[in-house]
Length: 226
Image (cartoon, rainbow, N blue to C red):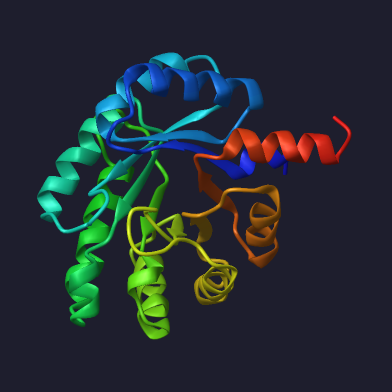
């Protein structure tokens, strides 16, 4: 796979302005990243900026805590897809997972997956499930991945980047082993340089989320004489 297509070029900070988001879109088009990942208020603008390219619009849902009602997440997902989202990154109900309420977590993911499959645009939209590894035990990480797979999620994702830690190679490897080819793995949070990005890919990451994407790509191109 083309190296640039590993990356979701990400801008999720609270003080991101429309001008910042447009700059990210221009960078994504220049380097041909997999997607631009934004908060839902920017979905329509990003869809317009990326029209006639193969760079997808990735919108976060229930971000960054995951602690809102399933209905709220469904409505946010519907709105995002109607506004042009081609991928959805949702945060699962972390507290419910830690409380052992697996049925609640499974239903939450299933409801969003259903919207990704059946929505007013008639598009099938890939779903990534953020499990927030830094808040989970090893067993909880495995359970979260198993629930995401049971709900037919397309990816499991390590982190929001807004909690106490981000992706680690150990977590990526554990998630890859747990999903056993039934879902892809996205690593995000703390991926700031080429060495870290390559380590995540070697550990099994199929996609990387980072705001340092341009610096990583420039380092990669320089290393490969491009």
